[in-house]
Structures are given as structure tokens and as C-alpha cells.
Image (cartoon, rainbow, N blue to C red; front, side, top):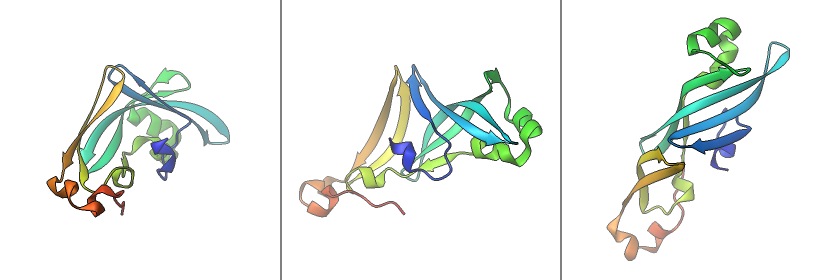
Length: 130
């Protein structure tokens, strides 16, 4: 799973339901384990996939980011920030992620293709993150 390689993203499961990406995790907060569910907005920035929370459940209860911060303080930041996911090392160097949408239970990526990929073997090799 792509998200398993992202530092700092707390993930046990990832689901795609309709036009929603969901993430569940169990976090150790204040000497207890708390089940957290997030719905995520997927966008692209500089060729990277960016996942940002747009909905939150803690222990099965809908909460705002402000309420979570009030309850758990800075410990809540591990689930409230955006995560940048480099995909360049998973696609040929001659391709660049331009846009992403989630619809009908699928993630659809729009890619820009360097026309030289036909003649330049290096562009057909995996890209590099960094």
C-alpha cells in the first residue's frame, strides 16, 4: 500500500467509498488507545499526492478539528495535518501527476506525459522522490 511508505501517517486501513477516501487508525493518546477515522481530500501539489483531513471521527463520534485539539492537545496533530505522498518513484520518470479525483469508488489520476518518453529510455525508468 502506497500510504505505508509515508512517514507520520497513522494508518491501519484505507477505504474508497463513492467519492470519499477514508482512513482508520488506532492511536495511543493519553495512556489509552483511541480509534480514529478520517475522510480525506485528495489533491496534487508539485506532482505529489496530498491527502488532507476533511472529516473526523474519534471513538465513533464525529468531531471537529478544534474539538479534537481541545480534548487531546498537540497529540492530535498527528491526524490533523496534510500528508504529502510522493508517487514519482512508482511511475516512469516521463510521467508527472497533474490531478487526482475520487469518484465512484475509484481514484483517477491525470498524468502529463513527456513526449520524449518514446525515444528516451531513461524517461521510461521509475522516477525519483526527493
